[in-house]
Amino acid sequence: MAQEMWIPKCGHVGAVTRTATPECEICGQEHQFDGWYLTMHERMAVYQYVYGLKPIGPHRPLADDVLAGKREPCRSCDGRGIVTLRRADHWALCATCEGTGGHWNCSPEELEALRRRVIEDFPDSGVDAGPHRFVSPGLVHDLGTGTIVDLLREPMAKGNEPQGDDEFEDEFEFIKENGELVFSLEWDSGAPGAGAGIESVYRWNNKFVVSSLDDCNPGPFASLENALEANALLNVNAATRRVFSSLLPTNDLAKQLRCREMGLTILINGETWISSATGRFRRASPDQ
Image (cartoon, rainbow, N blue to C red; front, side, top):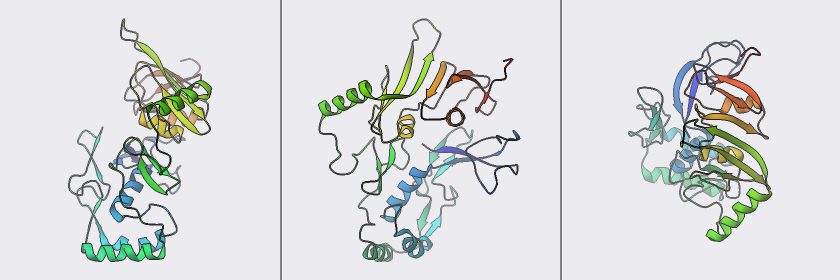
């Protein structure tokens, strides 16, 4: 999903112009909040929809040369495709450009002629349609077709579609029973009758499934990242007790966790961490 970005205010991040970290990890200086932005896969989905071309490939230099000048950035969203809402804690698709980040400055006929020029030189570069949605936790880059697909709304490459509920359930159960536990989030509300549980992700041959007592999107997914995003498993709150991942180093996992509360203490890969005022986690000192 869309992500918050900050402008670095110190010199410890080199040439980076924006970062997903609200404060410098070296000096602790807070960065300047710059609003919400589309993620990499979401930007790729917009490109695929707008230009009718694959977002990555040898055709891009030619496509960028003949097509990029035919788009004008949207003034309402500054070309982002999304706008940051007044309280800055959420976002919305830009209504002016319909989430595409810009407008054409040429006729449909001229656009199609330029697009055909690219496809004539690179026959495999064209796509018939983009994902149903630009913003979705299920967006992935299908390496089989070179396109962006939404796993929550459409199948992967032709031939990889699920063949029925029984086959899907068999695959899920097989991966769950035989796969490696690569992520878990344990929570306990502490209130009588309110419940507790563990959300788990299992891997088998680079396929990932999610197991939960609550309703969830079980997958399978092509990566741990997709499984976590599709089920919001990186969001933690006061009920969260511990988070574990065998694939993510502790520092990396801590950076990816999202929290809206200050002073929240949880175990991350067995170590005690505390959330700061910005919602980011830091290791607890020995006396805490």
